[in-house]
Amino acid sequence: MTVRLLNRDLVCRQAVALVTDYLDGVLSRRQRRRFEAHLRNCPNCSRYLAQIRLTIDTVGHVEPDELDPEVKNELIDLYRRFLEE
Amino acid sequence: MPPTLRSVGEEELVERLRMKDVDAFTALVELYHMPMVRLALTFVPNRSVAEEVVQDTWLGVINGIDHFEERSSLKTWMFRILVNRARKTGARERRTVAVDDIAATERFSPDGSWSRPPQEWTDDVVDRLFAAGVAKRLQIAIDELPPAQCQVVTLRDVERLSAREVCDILSITEANQRVLLHRARSQLRHTIELEMEGV
Image (cartoon, rainbow over the protein chains, first blue to last red):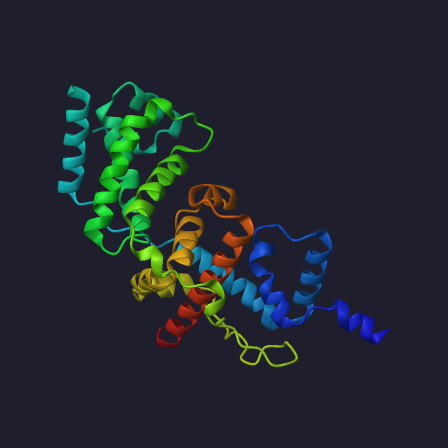
């Protein structure tokens, strides 16, 4: 019985491998249950998931460089020339 | 131009663009030029080539807007034009590293448990990181990812597009997309962890 349980329980390495699928909502119901069961008993993997969420949030705040006004004006000129043709 | 145009809905922008509205085009440039340069840089070797690819993309947008069928968002459509053009130009893509060649940043014991568990982050980590200028460091870390990972994480987490849109833009499978995203996020988490030690 113990062996069967061990086979069904995820180890941390397996749980970590499922994080992206979990966040994208593409795990099967069974996989998701196993993943969430592992998380309930594993502070390290819970912390890892929280940190991946924070990473996503942080990356989403990285702004592009400022648009060079000269580049912008060149593009608008390009558009005006296109309209005149 | 009226500053409000940047915030009008996409449908209205498309409509105005079809009526040859210069303000609508200006708004599009303001919204998407720099994000497109950033995306182009994941395919081509340098900034000047990226700017050329994006300018070429604008021509494609101007010429093609009447054929845009609105089956995808305008942004997705423009990004797809960009990727097609960048791939024809890009030399960078040839040195794509196979996903499996990159060692995972997480370390596990033979029994599958953590050998070096993630360190605790404080609740205000995002604020602290940005205050310390880590955003710049994070952009560099994104740029340093293998190109395919860089492309996927830029589209998913920087541009916040859906998995389906990203697969559509890059012509990759959902499974491949998730593997690349998983590697990229894992590496960027690791980057933040390293930066945290110095913050």
